[in-house]
Image 1 (cartoon, one colour):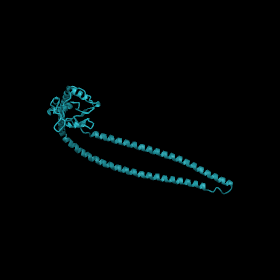
Image 2 (cartoon, helix red, strand yellow):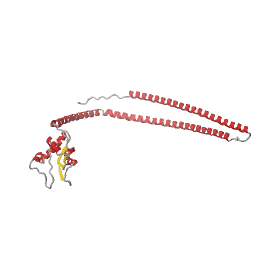
Image 3 (cartoon, rainbow, N blue to C red):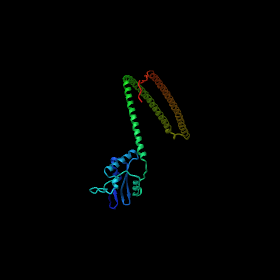
Image 4 (cartoon, helix red, strand yellow):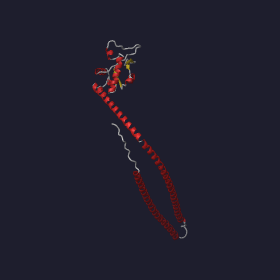
Amino acid sequence: TVLEQDEDDKWKGMGNQELIDYFSEYAASKARHAYGPNGHRGMSVLIFDSSAVGYMEAERLHDHFVRQRTDRNTWNSAHKVTFLPGGKRQLYGFLATKDDMETFNRHCHGKSRLKYEMRSYNEMVVTQMKQMSEDNQQLNYLKNKMVKKEQHSKLVEDTLSVVTQKLRETMEENTIVRNKAKEKHLEYEKEMKYQEEFFHDQIEKIHKATEEKEIKFEKLLQEERAKARQSDVDSGSTEDRRQRKEKIQNFIDCQVKDVEEFEAERDKLIKLHEEKKVKLKKEYLAKEFELEKELDTALTSLMDKHKPDIFKSSTSPST
């Protein structure tokens, strides 16, 4: 597999993929070449899968070289042809022996040496071919079993033809009934949605009115407090001014205290309101849950009442 020398007088040869592609019809998995200090040694190894199929592929390639008279015997003879007309090198090949592998590794340099293991022909080929034959017999058995099963299935299918037709008609009738029930359900949902939206709007109106009342209430408090602060406290005697200031401060203090009491009582009212809402929602959900359970029980009882009989085939599949 050596080709030519480069500028440094070192030999160049075929690459791994190039050698695999050259014999692509023989399904080799790897290729390795022997390299030494002067470059490519001219020896290469095609590696096949470690299986019976891999061995048969390697043997098929070996037979190709035998037919072409470029096998081991020709290589070892004194009449071997190294170059073809035109200067192209002649390629020789054969199944490798242990001695061939040792020779290959002796001519390798460094990491290009190959590790290999000797395995018996009986273990790697005969046993595996026997297993493949058994697997093939098992496959044929399974195929025949599948054919019988399909024949039985066809018989059952023909037997169920009338039953299937009646079932189809029943299903169509049930579909009509279900569609009517679905339409009725949609009507109920539409009515419920309308009721929810109506009461939601009413509640929103109450919230808005309450919010406006609170805004007016807050505004009234601010106005009265402003009036007290803007009253004339600088006229009259010193005692009069002191009394007016004291009166204004008492008014403001009372108002602040009253506001605090209002906010505390307001928080209590809101908390009580929210608790009542939560309780009401729980009661509603519990009743809705019980209602759904009641429907499920009734439907289950109805299905049990109208459950079809189990069909039993008069024939059984062959084994």
